[in-house]
Image 1 (cartoon, helix red, strand yellow):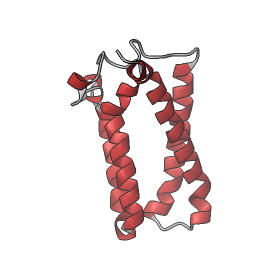
Image 2: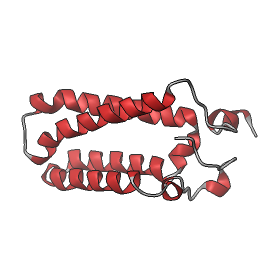
Image 3: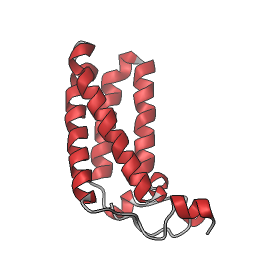
Image 4: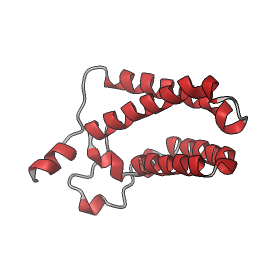
Amino acid sequence: MTHWQHIFFPPKPRTFPGDRWVDIVLRSLHLVGIAGISGGFLFAVPKAQYLPFWHLALSAGGLLVLLYVWTNGRWLLQVKGMTIIFKLCLLLLASLLPEWRAQLFVLMIVISGLVAHAPGKVRAYSPFARFTPNTDKLGM
C-alpha cells in the first residue's frame, strides 16, 4: 500500500474516544438546521429567518463529512458518501432552478431517509470496491 493510500484508506477505521457521541451530536444539529431551512425551500420564508439554520446545517454536515472521511476515505466511495455528493449536486441545482426548489428539497429528504434506513450492506456498498484497498465496512 502506498503512503497516500495508507492515509486515505487506513487498514482499520480511525476512532477517538467519544467519536460516537460527536457523530450523534453533529447529526442532531444537522437535522435542526435542515428543519430550519425547510421554510425557505417550501414556504418562501425570508432568507434572514432561515439563514442561521442554513449555517448550522452546512457546518454540522461539513463536519460530519470530514469526520467520516478522516475515519476512512472509503466512505466517499460507498453509497452513503456518494449520496451526500449527489445531494450537494441537487442543492446546487435548487439554487440554479429556484422554481424547482421545493421539489428538489423534498427529493433530498426522501433520498436521505431511504439511504439512512437502508441495511448496512446497502449503505456500505461501493461500486469501486475492487479498486480500493481493504474494502471492509466502516465503523460508522
